Length: 276
Image 1 (cartoon, rainbow, N blue to C red):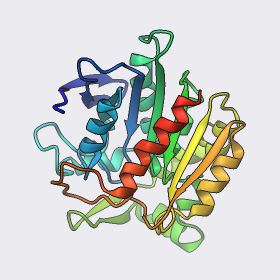
Image 2: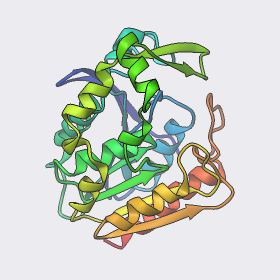
Image 3: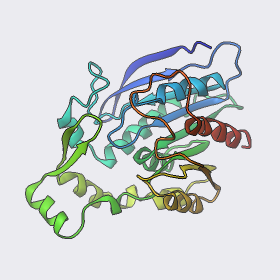
Image 4: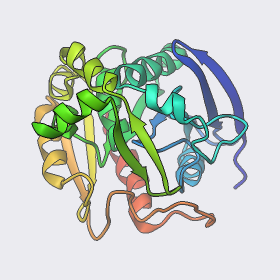
C-alpha cells in the first residue's frame, strides 16, 4: 500500500521543526494521530522510523515524526548532525516545549472517535511524558524510555570538571564525531528540575500509559520501564522478548518491512489503543 507523506517545516517556539506526516490511505478508517518524539542523538529519519510511520498509517493512524529544533539536523542535510552548535545548545526544556507545541497543533482536530497519542523513544519517551502532563492527549506510549534525567548527569569530580571546563564530550557513534554539552545543559535541568521530573509527570497522567521495553535493552534497563509503568494511575508494561533498545532496527534502514521487535510496537500499541 502506497502511503502519502507530507513534508514541511513548522516554526516552533525554539526554531524550525522539520515534520513528516504519514497520511491514512483513502478507504481506511481513521483512528487518530500519533506524534512521535525521537531520542538522544536521534532524528526523525533515523533507521526504520519512516517504515514505522507507514505501518501505523496503513492501520488507520496518521503518524507524525519531526526533528526537535536543536537536534542539529538541518533541512538541507537531514541525515547528518551538521549544526553541532545547535545540538550543543539543546536542553530538556527546549525539547519539552517543542513537543508541547507539536501536540498543540493537533490536539483539537479530532472527531469524537479519533484519538491523539504521543509516542517517544528513549530520551524522547521522557520528553513525551513531560509534554503529556502539559497538554491533553488520549494515550501516552513510551518505547525503551528513560525514567529520569537527573541520574544521567556526571557526579562528583566529573561534574566539577565539567563546570570548570564547560565541556562534556559525547561520541556520536553513528558519525564518529565528538559532540559537546556545555555546562548550561546541566544548569537548565537544575533550574527546571520540578518541571522536568518524569515521575511527577507520569503520576499526574489521567490517560492510559503504555510502556514498551525490549527484553535485552542495554541502553535503558527494563527496570526503568517497569518502574515508569508502575507510576502511572492507568499504566501498563509490555516487554518484547529477544530485542534491544531499538527494537531490531538500525541505521540506515533500507528494508520496506519492519523487523519483529518494531512490529511488536505497532501490534501492542494498536491493541492497547483499541481498549480505550
